[in-house]
Each structure stands twice: as structure tokens, then as C-alpha cells.
Image (cartoon, rainbow, N blue to C red; front, side, top):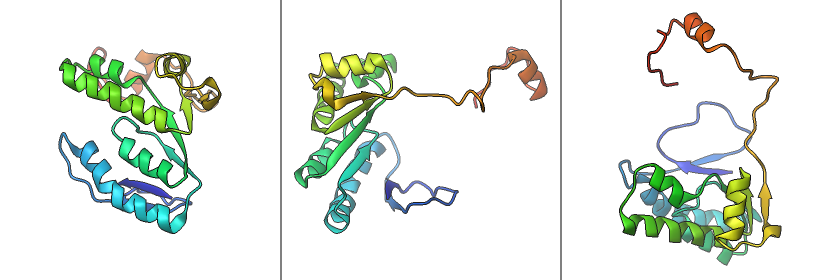
Length: 171
């Protein structure tokens, strides 16, 4: 079962149910989504009694993680970055915001039962700076199927797709 923001519908058929939770847009949408997810998650826990819950966004999800742990769920968190460092790279300079991001992300990491890190750098951060026991942290690097995806000549690809050399392209 997947709980997802109600910003649209997944176009493909899945082998599992997707429940869309209403969510407002704008700058606060991630935070409002977390708040709007509390009641559906509570109902989901009470009715379905999940043993394991996988979470991929943990920075401001600590109320959800706390709720899951309160009901005895094993919480596996995927860690894709060091949130405070990533925030600085994105240009966030306000010390209060950086402090909040750092503290809330560390709380979220500490509430997890197990962590899956996508790089050794992130794994080292989680163990050394956050203080998570190494036995609870697993490294599963992001990967690419090299049979399906191969490096190709950039100029040849641009020519084939009718993209001007030197033009800025997104996608």
C-alpha cells in the first residue's frame, strides 16, 4: 500500500493500492502534506497493522515516524542526502532554517529502526555525526542497469534529437 500526495494520479496500473491524501500546493506543501497525512496514517495503522513501513522523506516527517514507532512498526528510512548540507547547496542561508532542518532531520533518523543509505558518504555521516549504530545502517548504492543504459556520444545524440549544439536542454 502506498500513501501519496493527492496532486495527481499515477498513470500505470500497480500491483498494490495507492491512497491519495489531499495536499495543498505552494512553498509549504511538503509540510502541509505531513500534517494532512497524520489522520490517514493513524487509520491505516489501526486497520491494517503494518509490521514494516518504508519512508523516503524524513526531514519533517518525524511526527509520522513517532506515530509509527508508538504503534510498534518497524520503520525503514531511505537516506538520500545530508539535509543541512543539501539546504546550504540550494542557497538556504537563514541560520534558523538551517538549524531546524539539521535538528528535525537528525530526529527523523534517530526514530528509524533501520536506515538505508545510498552512498558511503551518507552512511559515514549517519554513523559518525548522528550517532546511529552501524548495525542499523545499510548501504545500498543507487545503481544503473548497464545492459539497458549505456554512455553514448553527446553530439551524436543531440543531432539525432534535433537539439542545437550548445543549447540548454532540460529532460
